[in-house]
Length: 331
Ligand code: NDP
Image (tube, rainbow, N blue to C red; front, side, top):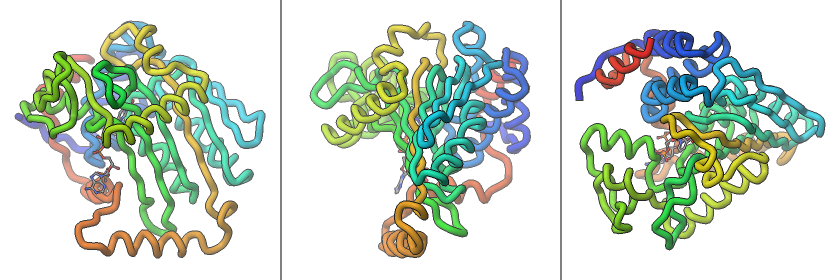
């Protein structure tokens, strides 16, 4: 793979310029570009510049509004309701997460539903934001079907990511953010592009048989992680991110979507909990001792540590050259 070195500033500028040239207003372009540059900075490459052509396609097709203004309601003290107004999620999240954090600091626990929105990014930015406000964060969203429930050979669940962050006073939070499929679809697409085999158990080909070939899995189905246990968690994500937000299940999203290469419309549920109000004084030291003990075992690395280490490197990032050329061609 040929790569092109880009500084973080060049990545942000390339993303923002491209979005502005294709229908985003200043606020939405800045919020999406920020999401993209943070993904590249942290090494979440499947949700960085790689997604930019998809963002553009969905504005060109008229599916997503690049100038959407979210409508935020906080009528019940512990519930924040956000109508994404058919825009991309980053600007809605930028506007609404402070409202959610404020509600959780007052009530101890608050939940936010984001609906009429298009999520095409990683989820760790939203839970990490909450942890930076000394809140525990949990977030999940759905997508179009690409994952077979345990026992089935046809797609029904999205790759349905679930993210969690726990605050550590004076330190980076502990964060996990994972698709509930064995691999995220973006990683299968990257493996197909770069000619890599997939790990065992990633998916089935169109004949319903297990395969390690990413191109066959893209024609067939992904599998949940951990068999029936991951399948149950993916089902939970469908219920939380769709039924509880009032938006579409993955199978409903597929029926509505125009398949333009961008994300389908869907909901996101985010829960914020104040450990201070819930557990009282001492929560920070108590949980810190647990996490430090866990991290002390040989072979253990804490989820989120890879990204947080990558973040220390402020130098250039190596971006796939054909992707850079594709993006430059969009503006
Ligand atoms: P990974 O399997 O790469 O990682 C999942 C989590 O496990 C991360 O928090 C990671 O931390 C942690 N982890 C990885 N390896 C280890 C290890 N050896 N020990 C301890 N922890 C580890 O992520 P996925 O491929 O499942 O998901 C990738 C992204 O795709 C997510 O950000 C998700 O939000 C996104 N996604 C978005 C969708 C959408 O619709 N918007 C749909 C599906 C996925 P670390 O980050 O530090 O490596």
